[in-house]
Image (cartoon, rainbow, N blue to C red; front, side):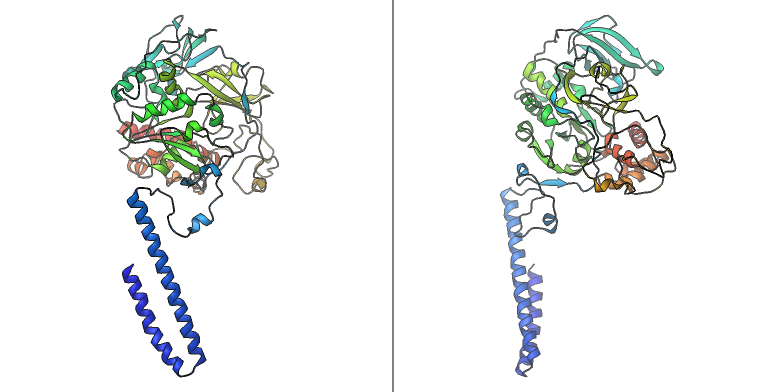
Length: 544
C-alpha cells in the first residue's frame, strides 16, 4: 500500500509542474489539464484513504475475534452484495451461502400442514438393505412367532456385533422374508394395539464420556440412525468424525416441511444435538433455509450447534451440498450426517428413556385424494398408510421423493430413513410424436418448453422418461444444476472406465446418490447416474 501511494504521488508531481508551466503561457487548455490532474489526485487520495480504512476495519475485526466468513467489513458494499437476492428479515446479518445453480421441480400433491390421526398402520418392517455396509444376511436374534418390544434387538451385522438393529414397534414377528441369494429383505412385525417399550437407562450426556455414549447408542439401537461419509455407510463406532452435519430443510419435490415436523418435539431435537456434540472432535453444523417464507423453528436456531444459512434451488437442502460449502470432505476425512427426525429419535432416548421410532410422514402426490401428514413409526406398511386415499389403481408408490426414492407397492414398507411417500401416475403409455410435439406441460429445464414463462406452475408427474438410454454425450446439463465444484459427467465416465485415481481427483468422496439425482433427471442421455455413482463408491470402498 505504501509503495502504491508513493508511485501515485510521484506521478502527480511530474505532471503538475508541467501543467503549471503551460498555464503561465496563457493557454486555456493548460488550465483544464491542471484542474483535471488536481481532481484525479484528490480522487486517488480519497481512494487510498478508503482502502486504508477498509484494511484497518478488517484487521480490527480479526484481532477482536468477531470476523466471520462471508461478512463484508468494508465501508462500501461489494458488487456481489449489490446484486444479491433479497433475504428474509429472520436471517438478519448472518452470512448466507447463495447457490446459483439448481432447479426446483414443482409438482402437484403437496401435503397439507395437518396430521391425519385416523391413518394407522398395523404392520412394520426393518429392511437390512436400507443399511449400506452391512452383510446381506445378518445374524438373526428372533424367529417367526417371537414377541418383541419396541427397541428389542432383531439382528446384528456379523462384522459389528455390538451394533443392534431393533424393532420400531412392539408386537409379533410374523415374517422374515428373503430375496435373491437368500438375503434377508424384511423382518415384519404385527404391531400391538398398545405399545410396549424396552426400558433403557440413558446416561447423562453432560457428564458421560464419549465411550459410554457410543456404547449406549449401539446397544439401544440408535446407532444406525447415524450415517458416515464418504460412502454413506452406517457410522463406524471406532472412528471419531471430523464434524457432524444436519440439514433442517429438504428442497426435493413435495418434501415434508421440517418446521412442521419438529413441532412439539423441540426438546428431543435439542437433546439430540447435545449428544452429537459429544461424539465429534469438531462441530455440529445445522443447515438452515434462507429462502423460506416462514421463520425456522427455534429448535433449529437456538440449539447448541453452529448454524449456516443456504439460499438456492434444489438441491440446496441436501446435506452433501451443505458439507461441500461449509467444509468439504477430503480423502482421509470422516463426517457423520443425520436427518431432523433421526436427531429427534436420538434425543428421545435421553428424554424418554426408550427407543421412540415415531415418524411424521408426508403422504404426497397428485394421485392422492388427500395429501396430508400422518403419525406412524419407522418401516410402516405403505398400503395401510395409503388405504382409501388413492384416486386410481394405475399408480406407482415411492418411498421417498420422485428423484431419489425407491419404487415400491402396497405390500412394501417405508424405508428406514424416509419420511415421505409419493404416489404418481404410472407412465405406461406413449405419446404420439411426443418428442416432436411436446403439447402436454411437463417438468423440464429445456427452453423448448415455455416453462420459464410460468415459474410457479405446478405439474402433474408420471413415470414416463420421454426417451430411452442413448449415447453418453457432453451437454453441460449436469453442471447447470449441481452447485458443487465437481465435474459430474467426467466423474461418471471415469467410474464406467474404472479409473480410480481420476475418480478420487474428480470428487467422488463428496457425493452420494441423492446429490446427483437432479443430474439424472435432466440427463439427455437417460443415464442411471445414481446407480453408476453407487457402483463407483463401492469400487473405491473395496480398494480401501
